[in-house]
Image (cartoon, rainbow, N blue to C red; front, top):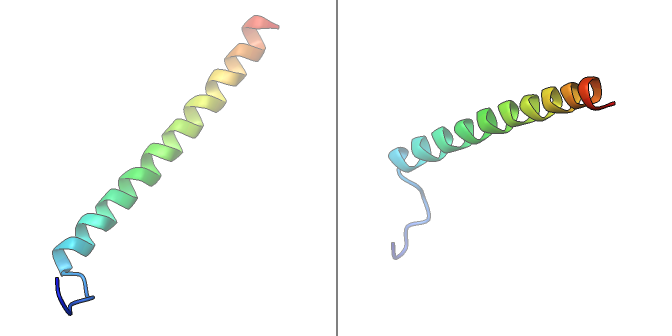
Length: 45
């Protein structure tokens, strides 16, 4: 938008929800990989 650098409140809320979703996905992905590595260490070694 010409001359407007501020984001609307709705846009900020949407970005915050996307960020929180990304952090949740990252957290559960990390936990899953750690569990997978532990199981691989138990059953494949």
